[in-house]
Image (cartoon, rainbow, N blue to C red; front, side, top):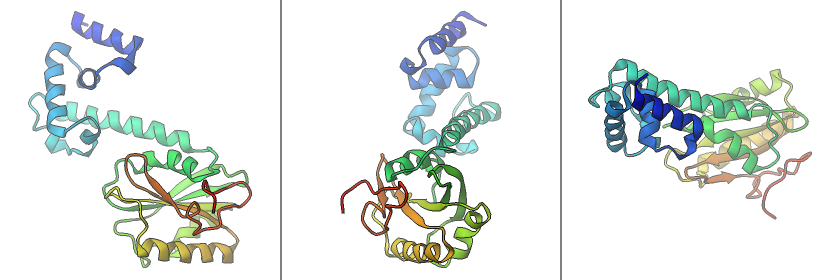
Length: 230
């Protein structure tokens, strides 16, 4: 390894948290860091920041001088590894309030540019057993049918469920469709004996809306509690 590459690698090993975004990207791009750092800077400039790189296509990445198919694939792989690492932390975690739900679920929604409706299956101790995708695309009552929404919960003998979906716009206020779907799902859960503990809408910048917190779902069931007084 050349001297500049060794220095960058040692910086990463000793204190990765203090490395600049362009230096971390230089390591992903591989090669002599003296040459890859300008490529990384140009990538950050064109994307508008590190977080926006995940939304770039292979073709857009390869428009950056110095980034070919191999380096573009390396960038995709790095973001996917990070996403999967965050997701794996959520399995088995206890979801006892809406903040717990947000912390466990936002990695799943990080790269989504359409509305995705998910169902978290919980055991009797409110630990997440798994999380299934129910639908993708524009959310409406015809797409999210109680039969489909509770199918996995019935098969897995879940104690309860929490539904989560994102608003790509970043806004968290529930729409009329959101409220209608939640009402239908809560009624279905009561009928089949698998209670709907909460429905959380994830926005952006740490914002979310909880139907239980808002008093629109009775979330006070065996340890799951709304975070605000009603």
